[in-house]
Image 1 (cartoon, helix red, strand yellow):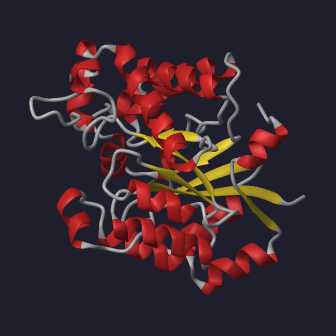
Image 2 (cartoon, one colour):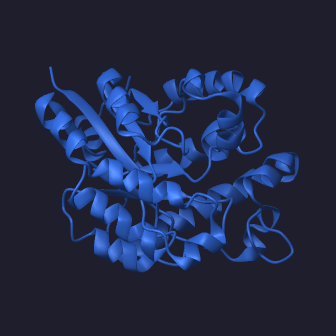
Amino acid sequence: MDKKIIINADDFGLSYGVSDGILKAHQEGIVTSTSLMTNQIDSVRALIEGLKYPNLGIGVHLVITKGSPISNQNDVCSLVDSTGEFYNQNELYKRRGKIEINEIYIEYCNQIERFFRISGRLPNHLNTHHFIGNIYPPFFKILLKVAEKYNLPIRFPKFEERLFDINELTYLLGGIPVEKLRKYQEENYNLLKNSKVIYPDNFIPGFFGINKITKENLLSILDSSDQLTEIMVHPGFIDKYLTKISTYTDERKKELNVLISREIKEYVKSNRVNLINQEFLIHNSIQI
């Protein structure tokens, strides 16, 4: 039986280099899907370019931890600082008790509506920029509410902690205490099972971080994947703007090189790996 795997590139629209790198990883590599940050500098151009590739699934990478909101700032004032920018993920988690949860719903909906205004169609999936939106249960509830409103699949809210050492996991979670992860993931999984939202069987973020970006690691991830799995990736080219706004820079180019490598493409071809995007979920209404 063929494996069904979604290779999803996060951060589409973050910068020109990131967007172009993602498109190259789709054209010449194994990326099948990408998630657009609608509030970032290259969001319009990236989406218009991405729509030229009919086999590329494009969703929305919902953002409440970087840049400024799409919404009127008066409508989401608990989410932004005195400059009108979103709090970073560490600060957002610290301030979680002060956040007006409905403001997240407003902002998420406005980001999806912006995608629709640019493209004339809905995205084919939703996920969140930084893990706080997919792991902290009160925020995850809003993600479910929005996904149900637009009838869109989301990212599976659980992953294997053993994929990372403690330092890597701390960096990945960005403010969420490591000791809370298992509790939060179980709570979210129960919320998801009791919803009408569709999602892949598995989610693997294990190709993230300088020590994880190797052909050997990606081959191991592909080989171990079963059922319908989403693998998170962050390919891109480095540009000056990216170096000013992100600490994840050289890693993106390294990811790109692995994702378009001959060895990876040959493995996919030789091992009956069925590379898909979230349209498969929508059309088959898979819900575990």
